[in-house]
Image (cartoon, rainbow, N blue to C red; front, side, top):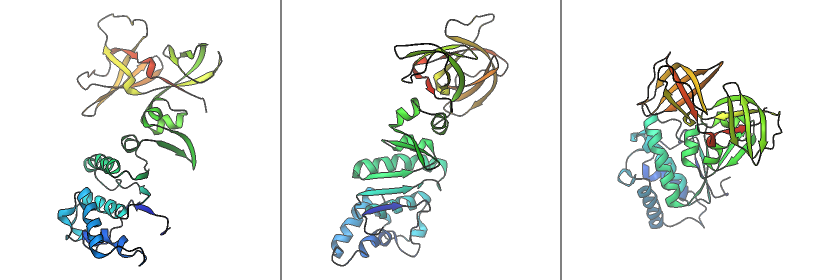
Length: 289
């Protein structure tokens, strides 16, 4: 492993507490085979360059134990980068940080990766991290790859229920295909029929599951006696949850509960009748397991 030219950032950082920031980063260079080891001036130049990139240059002489969690994470990253590896492996490096710092470090990691151009493999159970950091995602289950693709494709066009559940949250409506043609399917679900595009070859009468992201459902209050227009569903708000930048509503439509996510300015109290509109170009079909 030590001869493969890899950089590694561990979940626990694994920085050496008895060393300064500078010595932590210089260590991989100091232990290189003598014939490959750079001289002292080159070591200092390479270390300071990577400390500048990770914004730790002013802390070069500080003991590693005197760093904050975010600084320790950047130190572990700097140590992995100093040898200019062909490939960098990151094992859930942000899992030990608090929510606010984790969000800031996502952007920091993406900036560093783009600036340095190092190919990186990043392992995470946090779907937000996966979507924010990657150019390509592989979703795995029981050691097997379920789907590989760009973040947007994985999110908007999941190929299985597992992928749709793992990356974000979804409503799953079982249904039956009632019409098919030209890449367009009509699916009869409990709340009502849906027309959507899909590359899946499913015959009329076939059983499917429609995956609907909460943000793809628009909600508005129904005026007294207002009837649902074509393409709208009538439902009753069961519960709501304010989340700062969004608000979620759970709406009962017939015997089905549909979760919506939208602008927090639109807040409807439980018990009120609402009308739901689905963005049909953002619906996805997943096979029945």
